[in-house]
Amino acid sequence: MLSNHLPIAAALLRRRSRHNLLRHAYAALAVSLLCGAVHAQEDCFNQAAAYHGVNPSVLRAVAWFESKGDASAINRNANGSIDVGQLQINSIHFGDLAREGVPHRALTDPCVNVYVAAWLLKQKMVKYGNTWRAIGAYHSESPKLRDAYARSIQKILVMWGELQVASNSQ
Image (cartoon, rainbow, N blue to C red; front, side, top):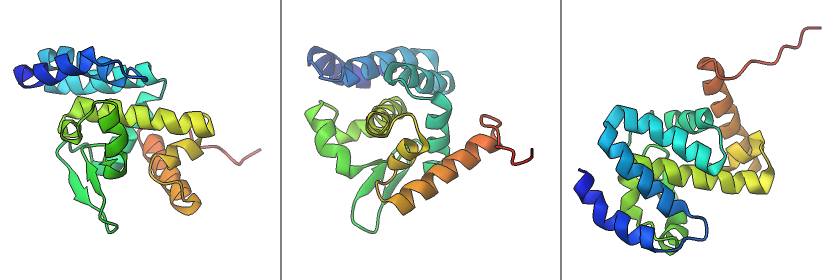
């Protein structure tokens, strides 16, 4: 399995990415593949979150909401776009990813998918700050859809015990 990723990884590591997305993603992928699938999956979430400065629990909650963690998930949307992998990276990003040297086929790799999702979430955090609005904007810039998505992620985090419910009592 590792040998399948080495040619892509080597080529991408030589390319200078303005966000260093690829270098870190493929280096982590190579190490993770040596460690085993389940452990690698957890390492990818933690490493991608640390590298991009996002919360790993939020990334996991997004993966759960989007696909129940199904790394092979591919879905076609009503507007004709396609969502790929456990974090359902939308085809609207394929052009930007290609310019960064990430072919859309690479998104079916769980670790690459997590790194790309962390990169996309970080872009929203740069735009909106470390807020629920940024988390919702991972899904949609439309306020109604954005806010509903953020509430869904909040509910998952509360269910997992990663987020406390605010008390209205005095």
